[in-house]
Image (cartoon, rainbow, N blue to C red):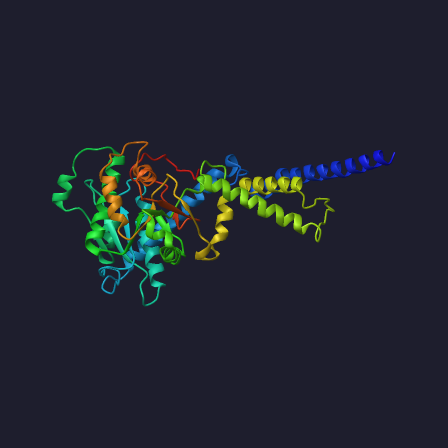
Length: 395
């Protein structure tokens, strides 16, 4: 009889705990998170059919307004006192902005937006300038890049000479053309300015407010002396934990274990629902999976945003394939990258970002890294090298 009582008592505790776990999971994943996250663009709960079109239109409208504001800003800016047009030799950091004419997005003035943001950030650096800035105009069509032309009085703008254009007139595919333009900008900027470190931005890469502070911190870390490049952007839609990248899986498991331990240690002191969970192996596994599932469903992107509290909190990990709108090349790495890219021919499915990724993976002594969260916002809804839909969407 006592054995039966003990068995039923233990069975009651187990069933109560299982019931609590089930109810907690249902309430969290079927009620609370859907209510809180259905408008979060990078969450699994995001309702595309309801919100995607309106959010896409809103982002396009904001970008258009910023572009028009930037156009007015540069049209009325005085050129005689511009402190960005004269570039000193051997700066600690050179920012090279690669630009080309965009037939489908001229009213958005992406380049002018980026340069306005850079000028504002540089203006906040004080007497000691954070970086020198160079515009590399690679437009080779019959029409001028009017935005680059407008900036000539404010920044140094480099282009291919007439002879260089003739040499580069060979008809090649879009991806090879993009790679050659990139290599030209890397080499020309290094030749003219000879910087100690270089950042290359595409003209639709809008820097975040802490752009220069984080780059300064990255360059102070030891790993930067041994890397070919550091990616400053990775598409938010590809930042989930459920990913073939091993480091993310380890990060995900670590988050689950830390979160589970914290919850189980908290329950004895604060448990409004009278939970019967204890710090046992089975309960630890359940809550680890619970935290991991919640983090993935909400969206890793939103957890990464918490790292913006300090430059020291930004995470550095092995680089992924896509994409290259913002790249940091420490030391003379830009010249090595130019040499590597020159030795390859780019086609669809093997663009310069994928080529660089495989070079860093297969070349002895070379490494590549990525920083998270992103240091730029990719505002280029319309591409200068690829076909564009009538109305671009965020996803």
